[in-house]
Image (cartoon, rainbow, N blue to C red):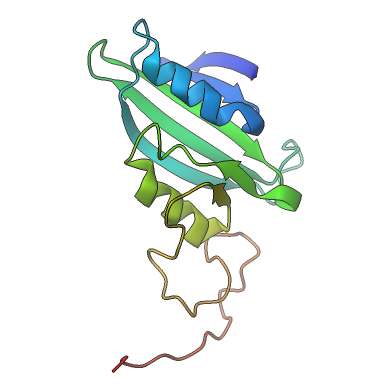
Length: 147
């Protein structure tokens, strides 16, 4: 389940296999000794052209325990060939919008998400603009007002 754990600049980080992220998240929230009741942030990273990274993408979860006043980062490597990870919206409802943003910008699918659709770009937009191989000068379909 856990691949690696370390502290960097006073921040605890745990690297988890993507297959186990949902079970791991549930444990972090339900365990009274940990009590990570808040998802502060969730974001994607594209490591295209980084030789030291085995997988192209990473999803990072930033958690906080309001009772214990401690934080934790969870990192999950996501290969380009299977750019999908389980949703954590059932654990932290705030993940709903964050996961939609990561899907919209990076194309990482969150399996089981209740409403995975674009949140920043319009529905007809083609591609995912924060991918490092997205052509910045790519023409997009023109849309007008919907009557």
